[in-house]
Amino acid sequence: MCHGMSVRQIFVGLFCLLAPLFASSDGPSWDVNYKQGLAAFDAGRYSEAAQALTAAVDQARVFSPVDTRLVKSTYTLALTYYVQGQPALAEPLYLEAKNAVEGMGESGRPMLGYVLEALGELRMQQARWQESEQLLERAVAVCIETHGETHSCTLTAQRRLGELLSMQGRNSEAEGIFQKLIGTLRQAPSSPELLVGALTNLGGVYNAQGRFALAEPLLRESLAVASQSAITGPALADSLVDLGQLYRLEGDSARAEPLLQKALVIYEKVNDPHQAGALNELGLMAMDEKKFAIARDYLSRSLSVYQKIVGSTHLFAARVKAGLAEAFLGERDIQKARTLVAEALTTERQALGSQHCEYARLLTLAGKVEEAGRQGKQADKYYRQALDIYRQNFRDGHPERSQAERNYARFVKSLRN
Picture 1 (cartoon, one colour):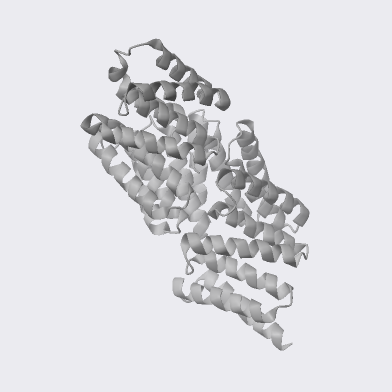
Picture 2: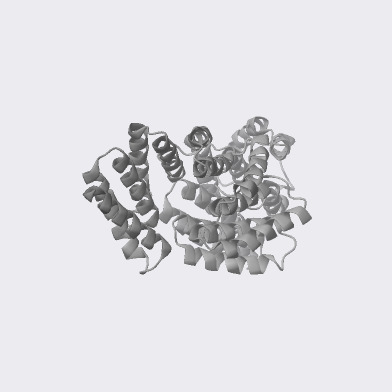
């Protein structure tokens, strides 16, 4: 999950669209419950918000299946569950909101883009890539049609689409979207939180490609914009995590750790599920320093959060399992490492296919585990599969391909000795 516009911004945008339709409300009960729920949400009192919003949804269902109050309350309650890391509760409410707003015809068009974007983000977190892409592309088109190219509805949907592409490793496509988005947002001072998010996203894409010289100025700019705009919540923490990741990948733990710890405090203060990402980075940093017990603690905590949010077979959980497997490998617990790698391989293959670079990285790890367990034949199989993928995806001389070739040559030499 990624942060974009604040929830308050989204709600204000929707409320402005709907305000004329609520002017002649037939009673205060729905209005009171909805406003109380929104106030509780803004204060971070999610259980209280869900209680009030549930009452509002129940009341709205009495009015009409295509009543604007039903759209507004189901959408808001779904978002309440979603930001708490409860997508299973959010999903039926988002679908109800979508059905209601589509049933309204042209009068519902101004709200449709918001609902499609939210549902598209949910599908993205569920690794339902094709469905998510279709929803987000439709959201972008509807938002442009109803609100224009530079409206926050359009820009948020475009950002989500970029996030989806980067999550699938389609980095060149994601880079184009984020670059265009950042150019627009730099000229739109009214959307600083969106700019912070887009800068962080593009920095993350460059981190994944090892293009740290391009990533760092973007991530520093995101922190500067956050400071200037008094953004102190999870959106700031996202930038801190990505900059911390950059420093970790550069081997500079002295600069990485304070950023990651600061982000973790921000997330934990509001019980934000993104704390899993900060915990994962702290675990990987400990691993780099051969502090395997510390790494295992951080990564186990990260995995626990992901399992509660999206389940143990989700792509996010698989990536943490890979790190946890490395920690167990460092402690020479081959069986636990082998089990975790096998689970991660299954998830990665189902989510991204058997020719993806992330799958190759996991195969390499699996090879290391089997090599350490003195299972040379199985290790050879994994190393060869990984090398084949790298050769298909990267040109001769690419750092990752070259590293894989050196690693396999080392392994073959060790078998001869």
